[in-house]
Image 1 (cartoon, one colour):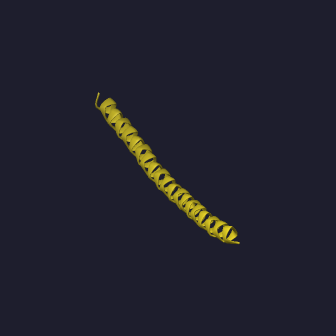
Image 2: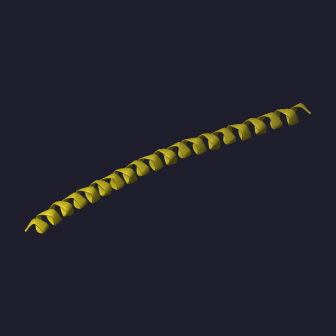
Length: 72
């Protein structure tokens, strides 16, 4: 009877530790997902800004080239 009681307490203790570990793993995965979403959003903003800047530079170069050709 005493052995069963000890086994039962030890089993509950191990289950509690495993439950905490699983909960920590799930929390870690959610934090990792949140970080990935933020990184993807930041990359999207940077790439969109780069694309717009490239378009504006191309428009400026085209305009300057046309003005130079008109001046010749």
